[in-house]
Length: 371
Ligand SMILES: Nc1ncnc2c1ncn2[C@@H]1O[C@H](COP(=O)(O)OP(=O)(O)OP(=O)(O)O)[C@@H](O)[C@H]1O
Image (cartoon, rainbow, N blue to C red; front, side, top):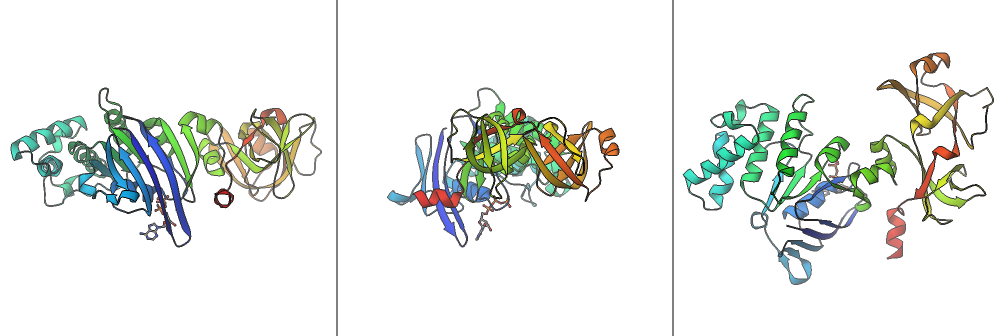
């Protein structure tokens, strides 16, 4: 079922205003920093929190229509919610936990158990049917919780950080199960997934919406959003550098002027206009690191003084992080040659040809100001 939702509410120091659409069978990942409003969006969709302005439609059904005073209770929404923790009923066996949802829809006890067995097999937990929840590992319990959510035959599945509580050994298997049940051909399950983990977003979803301070600041196919990040949050997810400011046209292309007056030169996107909020995006591999006291050779357009804060292994290279928020990738040999340590002052150089300048979202306060 296609989901259309428009939600707005405010709390002390927090305003939420989002509209989102997920096509029939689509998986939308909602990403964003702590406190951005991700769980609040899910709670509104699940009917657990009542937004001040709410229009939510699932296929032909209206779940919320603030103007008409419609607010369906959670149990009448046809929505399955899977949280970080499995939250199984401790006094019921695994089989009866999963059978609970079809039972509540009026299916006979034997029929509900058949449905439960089918779903347990689907999540590779058929052999756990007779266990008590207390006798399950975290990964097993979460698989059972997936089966329980799906046995209710929801039209909309809401996943709130479904892998976050699992250890690194258990998460991949459960991710694999989720991926399979979400992608199963012929199943038209519309899903909204809240996650902090870009890997979950990449492996489980088709589209992504990035939420910041209660507003969607980026959205689109996940690979496109990560390829052209417009906010620091998405840049960090994508592992690239991002410098924010205002677009300035130059003789050779464009630059971003930062709040401190620094100009960052690069190749402009086609739709960029002077004065737009803009970001300069570049790969840590494109950043050359020099000692502070030696003149930079060649003619890179962008030269920034920085101070090393951390050196981290990153595959075959070492990722250098700086107090100024920029990262650079170096070989271990260069780190040794340059005698780099936290606290070392350095000079970073980036060629304009490796920097992409494109429009950024307006800060929420400015957007509000215009409405
Ligand atoms: N029950 C509540 N009562 C009052 N304020 C709340 C409540 N729940 C959340 N908030 C506030 O609403 C804002 C959005 O919180 P929400 O939990 O939706 O963010 P989130 O993006 O899910 O964050 P996280 O990634 O940390 O889980 C935050 O400012 C939070 O402090």
